[in-house]
Structure formats: structure tokens, C-alpha cells
Length: 332
Length: 96
Image (cartoon, rainbow over all chains, first blue to last red; front, side):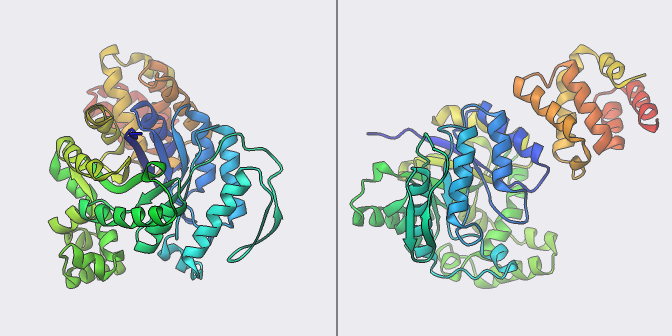
């Protein structure tokens, strides 16, 4: 069965909650299918934000994009998404992954057994939200846990992944995979791992919503779109392992100078050091036509959901309108 | 003069521009958390119903803008919307 292309949008709840709700209402109106809200302890709480969004929307699907099992025990995550589902029945999804190393480090959390933890957490969330009584002794110890309320709809679980093993795990157990990449090269490589994992688990790729979770910036003025993308791309470059930088022909020294500038909080210097190669490797940015072309390339590779991630554009409200008016109609 | 009267004085043909510049002011403001929660809920309610560009919607945005960015709100009224008279009224209202 051919899967229809879906479009998602990511919001980082770092500003007043009503702004995220405002953009969410707009995204639903403009034809997006999914809302993904990031989960970092230092921003607004993901589930409080999702609860507010659930009240103000009617159609769009939503979930954490992504939570991690190291800061929130999977039974708490199960409880949270089940509660959101009560407010947004049949519209709730759950993204889970390894978590953001930088913010986890701030809390002294050093993730151990990452793959096992994500795998077990997925199982716990899935079984609890299916109404099961869960007993498990592994990375998590759960002795007879059960939710005291019924979850009427199944909550799909998406595994957020970047490395080969996590991608394969996503292929093996995920209802979807959130591939943290923007370039065709990275998506293609990631898909090979997802397919491998799915095949080993005896699954068909049609069962998996292959999601490209991109860094995106659109504006009628290409220069403005690029300028907005530079801030996000600088952080991606700084956090990328050498192997990924080499794959894109980005000299280690260039990445290091961005890391150093960010470390000194010299934002202007860091952002202005972002090169065309970096933008092309780690973002989709430009005019609506340029972005559409790049999206089509990813869809042809087998992507079934395209997520517009931060920064979205120099003016988020206008960029959501632009995507809804000039990009989605040609691709949905 | 009240905020309602200021909103009533905005010419019909400027309402579309007014809601856009005011909402962009609020969405890009780092002081948006100064807006009382009931006011932000009212804005969301108008937005959800698709009536933020109505006179009542613009009034809500103006009130919120005075909380978050009073000087910028006056400057927008005066320079972007070319309504200097209303900007002065808003300034008098804000001082009260």
C-alpha cells in the first residue's frame, strides 16, 4: 500500500506557552499533519504545552519529539501521553530517543545502555498504553505497573535516531522513525540502517512512518532564509561527530572554530562562520521553490513524513503561511 | 479614550495590516510573558475562531502590545499603520 506524504512541524517551547499554541493552531489550519514538541528540562514542559495545544486544535496529531528515558521514567511518559490522548483522542504520538547529551550532562545524567533503555522504554510505554500490566527487570525495573485508566486509541511510538544502531532499532520496533538529518546523503544512509533493522525483525517498511526531522528555513528572500538557518546549523555543526563532518567534507578545524566561538558565546562570530557546505549538509533552506525541490528529493528516497524543524524561517508566522500556501499544496 | 475606542477608530481597510504587525510584535517580543494570561487566552480564542483580524481581535492585540512593548506598539501605529493620532491616544492611555 502506498503511503501518503505527511507533513510535520517541530516547535521548541522556549518562549511563552501561548506562542507555541498560536503557531500550532496556525499549523493545523495550514495543513500540517503532525506537531512535534521538543523535550528539554530548561524549556516549557512538553506535556503542559501539548495539553494546551490539544485544547485549541481538532485534527493535527501531536507528541513529544523527542523525549528520553533517562530523565522521565517510561511509566511517567506512558502516563503523560495517555493523558494527552484523553484530550486529543487518536491524535497522540510519542517520540522517544537517546536525549540531548548537552542538557542531560547539565543534570549529571550520563546515559548508560542507551539502545537497551530506548528499546525497553518503548515496550513499557506501548504495553502500558495498551492497558497491560507490565513486569520488567532490565534497564528499568517495573513490578506490576498498570494505568488506572483506559487508553482508547493506540499511541504510535516513533524512535528518534541518528546513529546506525539506533536507526536499526527504530526499524525493528518503531511505528515510525524520526531521522535527525536534512541532507539526501544522510537520509539515504539512515534509511539503509532502518531497512536493515526492519528486515532483521521481519518487518515491512510499509509499517514504518519514515520521518525526516530536518532543520528548515524558508523565506521569499533566500538571504533571509539562510541567515535564520545559520544559528541552528552552527549548533548542529558544533555537536556533530567527526565522521559526519567528514562525510560532508567539512574540515574539522572549521567546526572547531564554531565550537570555540559558541563556547565563548560569541554568537555573531559562530553564525558567520557557517559555510554553504554546512548549510547544505545540515539544513533545508531557501525560497519556497528551492525548499520544495529539496523536499521532493527526500520523498523520492522513501521519506513518508517530512518535518519542518527549527528555525522554520526568519519570521515563523510568515514562514508557516508560506509553507501552507506554496509548498504543501504541490506535495500533498 | 478607551482601548475599545482606539480600536474602533482604526479604519476598516487597515485592520488586516494592523493585526499582522501587532501579532508579529507580540510573537517576536521577548517580553511576551508580561501579557496577562487571560489576555493571551483571549488572543488564542480569536485566532482559533479565525477572527483575530476583527476589530475586537485587534483590540485584544493592542491591549497585549501595551503590556509587552508599549513604545514599539505606538511606533507601529504611527509609522507602519500611518495612524499617528491613534498612537498619541495610545500613549495617553498607557501613561494612565
